Amino acid sequence: MKTSTIDTRSISILKLLEPLSLQDSNTLSFRPATLDCIGILKEYIDRYPSRSCDFSIGGILLWADYFHYSFAEYSDTLFLKGEDDHGVFFHQPLGALSPEEGMSIIRDYCSSNHLLPRIIIPGECDVDNIDEYESSHDVYLPDWREYMYNIEQFLRFSGKKMEKKRNHLNYFMNHFADYEMEILDGSRTQKDQLVEFNEKFNLYHKDGDTFDYESNAIGRAIEEYERYPFFGLLIRYEGHIIGYTFGEAVGDTFIIHAEKGDIEYRGVYQALSSLLSREVAEIYPEIRYLNREDDMGNDYLRQSKLSYHPTKFIAKWEISA
Figure (cartoon, rainbow, N blue to C red):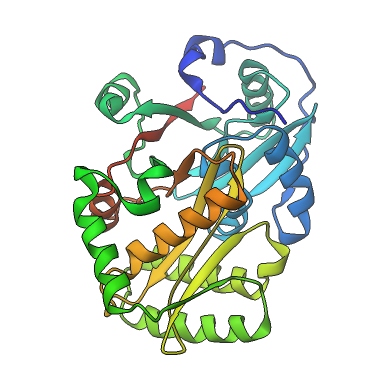
């Protein structure tokens, strides 16, 4: 398997803007991203793994209706197109073509269809360099940066930086010692109980249209769980579900798509993340990083993700050529 990840630090923006004219204007034929396309999408994701959640099954399909995602294939390369309040946008192509070639194809497609070629570029950066990234790119997208962590950080929350998280985890383990952990298996019983848990969870966590969409998308994913390449678990206490989490392995990164817990049980979130990390480390020994995705501009989520002390960010910016 190819193990390199998308890292655009080596890509010259000037080169991305240079026309290559490799193909005619009708090269790309887009179709909606749906569950039936998992096999096609996963083939590219497995062969050309990226650490960004944008290039994962969950990252695409859980948000397919929100962003109206569609995809096209050309020359062993995957092209993703979406829509937001500002119009059509494209993710940097994933596959055999070089970034310069992929950008040229997008520009030609946009020219033929009278679209502005807005292209979202991801790039890894160390936490200490995020200010440099923000200042050096004209259209930096801080709300969409993804949070990356060494998986070892989450096994037991060792070290002084993680002391508060470790205290919460220890509290949970000591006060709810009779908890039960189950691997998510897509059984009807689990699905029904997770739906019930989500209904109660959503009553106390209303936070706008994006939250509502995400909650509904996760609910639909649970109903079709066995069709996704997800791995996850739930925690019960006294027979009742008090939290669950799931994600997917891509290359050396495990991307966490969902994590929901009942905060009446102090430390449940630390228990979920620690238990998941331990299971992932055993089942997927190649995993080095956890990607806990972006914060969508939500201040509470941002502070929460920062409190776990990320190792890296997947920074993102937009170019219009």
